[in-house]
Length: 177
Image (cartoon, rainbow, N blue to C red; front, side):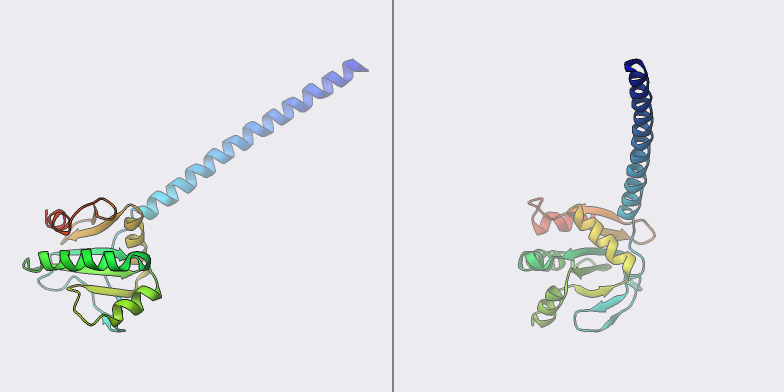
């Protein structure tokens, strides 16, 4: 009887081992599929730059005559004062360079309400609602502590700004390079 029990246990171990091996391969395949989806999501680019600004005005595409570079970034409600101060200074520094358009995207309605109530000009446009792909591209860039810069006729590229200890002057220079 003990001999049959050992054979049954060996067969069960082989079956469990085969099942574990198959399950392990499936897990690896699923991890690769998820990683590919995440990577493709991170590669989204900005398209038309259309949406609604914080005052409720419809924004037209940034590819207007005279615009040769568009900079987009995320304004986080929990860091709004710091973000606005940095980008106000960046906008001031690049304002003498014609052809640069700067667009901030609010991360929530609190941000939009606050920015919409700011009396002094910011020097850049702030989107409350943008196209889904554009908004996701900005969120993806922010997840990497970046803003997106797109020169006319080229793919957007990320410029690190958030949490890097850079001054508005250094950020401006990276945008214009």
